[in-house]
Length: 176
Image (cartoon, rainbow, N blue to C red):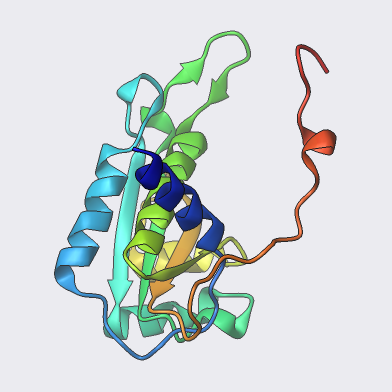
């Protein structure tokens, strides 16, 4: 059990946003495992208000113009994460719709699994959502949350310290 915990935490310490990828396809069995992680993710009231579009090859090339940053065009695969707000759980007290939260949970879990598979990923929000919807024929009532680029990283994923706020700035005990 202790060894599993150590491996789990090391995995999350290795995860980073990857922007340069090898010219190597992701094996179908790995991809299927990752897609099943999306499917099994937590969802508020189990509404599962999500859709994921796997884009690769020539279809992926058509998406390149929607990236507002050029660093993602060499990724061999993209997963376009979409939310369907009309299918999501809504908190009654303040009418907050959880569609984007649910999609974010699913994608985050998949990114951890991709790291375990030796793949690099990057959550890309610097996109033109209208262009994505047009290129991929996404219905008007569906939100494009992000594009996750994925592939084998050019550089090895290793444990590195990241520029993050200290716990004392973000954790509150008992009250604010």
